[in-house]
Length: 90
Ligand SMILES: Cc1cc2nc3c(=O)[nH]c(=O)nc-3n(C[C@H](O)[C@H](O)[C@H](O)COP(=O)(O)O)c2cc1C
Image (tube, rainbow, N blue to C red; front, side):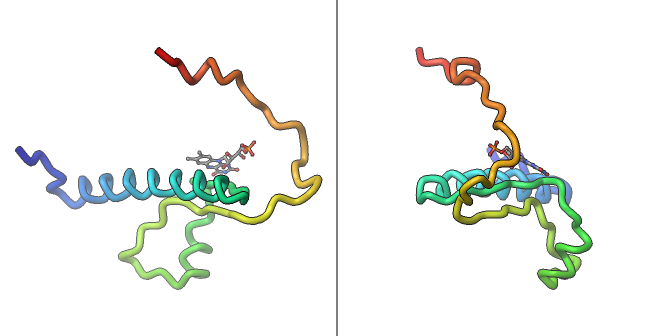
């Protein structure tokens, strides 16, 4: 039984969720191939639209910076939580 999306807002939400998940796959694939990335949900949408010449129909979700890791490229110690806090193997 299909239960949507029906309205424009529902379709937009569906597209946003799918695109965000795709971006996560992209950054995981980048790492698997030896590259680093920085996913950014917070960005200057006006500038991104201008830079990429996006029309009003476009709906930018995320900016992903990616490239080769620079030696000494990390500004400060990275914060890492214990894996066990997030992964439970049953
Ligand atoms: C969905 C998502 C959105 C993010 N948005 C931003 C953002 O808008 N600006 C930002 O500085 N970092 C953002 N981050 C965090 C960075 O992509 C990155 O994960 C963080 O700087 C930690 O980097 P590290 O894992 O190399 O320590 C976001 C991360 C995720 C997963």
